Image (cartoon, rainbow, N blue to C red):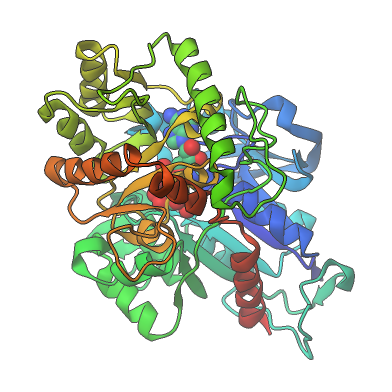
Amino acid sequence: MSEFNNEIWFVGAEMAPLVKAGGLGDVMGSLPKVLLKTGMNVRVVIPYYKNIIPKNLIDIREVYPPGKVNFGEIPFDFGIKTGFAMGDIPVVLVEQNHFFNREDVYGSHGGVCAYKDNLWRYAMLAHGAVYAMRILGIPLVVHTHDWSGGLVPAVVRQTFGDEKVRLQGGTEGILNAKLGRHVNAKGLRPAIVFTIHNLGYQGVYGIDDFYDIGLDFKYNSSSAYEHFGTFNSLKGGMKLSDVVTTVSPTYAGEITSPGFGFGLDGELKSLKNEGRLKGILNGIDLDYWNPKTDRLISSNLNLNEDTYKLKDYGEWKDFKLKNKKALFSDISMPMKTGDNGEVLPLIGIVSRLTEEKGINEFLDALFNWSDFPFQAVILGSGKDYIEGKANYLSKIHGDKVYAMTGSYDEALSHKIYAAADIFVMPSKFEPCGLSQMIAMRYGCVIAAGDTGGLHDTVSDIMDAGVKNPSGILIKHTSPDGIAWALNELYNRYIGDGAEWGSLVVNSANKHFGWEDSAKVYESLYYGIIK
Ligand code: ADP
Ligand code: GLC
């Protein structure tokens, strides 16, 4: 007889502060932290990568016995470790050196050059996670993420069966840690929640790959992973889960249309009609991303209240100027002033450099602009041609543009958020976007694509109905569209200060924490097991 351990298990490919390649890492670190605070029992399962930051992982223990899985004819041994990530989040780590002892999370250049065997790597994560459940107690809910967590629902079902746990005589708050373990006499499976963070990455492989990742062959069907003759990890993950969520309300609507659905819009539309697709806005960790206490920036914000007034703009101006000076001295770029004697506004970019992010078009906007009245600091890695273009721009405009490409640099990202006046994120699609939320927390005015989570979080200065604008929404991610938006912001920046000041203060007042969305997740978990 097994038992339910009254836990919610997150399974995914990354988790800050242990290992992070992008926003998924932030979410896997920050949402569990808030759920734990509300009294829920949460654990996070990720691979035991070589590049986990050791000081952020404590109390590591080996779980016995180690596991084994056959991928086709080849047996693979793996280990399970438990421990705590900084912030006291319980973690389970799947250790398999052949797959996880590598330099990068998904592959080099921010995952753009993906490892060829990523399907096998994340199949290993799924098998390891479910094996750990058998040993440590079956959770009530498995919350798995993205295509890399897309094999988890199949392994859960083939291990525990299709019949899902239901709490008899359940009361609200059953997920509370105090309620102890539940006997799982029938060996039921946990409920499964699947979150899509980005539909642009689906984990598509050849159909033959079914036969060597340890999945039951019955999942080679269009009601699971088969998709027009291919193996589609994301599709199967969706089909075999009880509820699918995505990371903003607008994106949840967009992905049911062909322009954003990447071939899965039909499936997503059906899920939506069945009431099984929900858009829940992400939050950020407001303690970690805090301009008053951030130790990675050179000067902290000197204000006590968290609700800023227009009169506080002076402090914000001071904060920006000090951090700008420090950043410019780090990167040896001169601080430039414009015709009117104002320090030129600093544009910040912290981004994966892929097509979807619109940075290529942003670079073209600056190339086309004979004497652009901005300075820019760009941090990002991704596609070679975009990295190359950023580096070339910084070569020909050395006094105005600095580019740090091909690397992931947490400390520099904080410095950019703190120093930048304008944060640019002209995405063509953006499931949620955390960078703009972080940038707003640090008092940046935003220029963003009018899509997905950007639409849900940036209040547009051009929209007369908006009360407290925090930036500008770019209708078309083209060089001209971006130049138009930057020009609009520049005109406000050089104005009398009051309009710019209110933009900065509005932005910093947005506070995109997790509290509200964590409550929505809690009732969603409860709703599928009650
Ligand atoms: P995505 O997950 O699509 O890349 P998000 O806006 O959701 O976009 O999250 C990006 C996260 O990754 C943010 O926390 C951002 O600061 C961080 N980030 C992106 N690129 C880098 C980089 N090169 N160095 C440091 N942090 C980065
Ligand atoms: C993905 C999306 C991004 C989102 C992040 C966290 O990487 O591209 O928009 O913010 O996941 O959910």
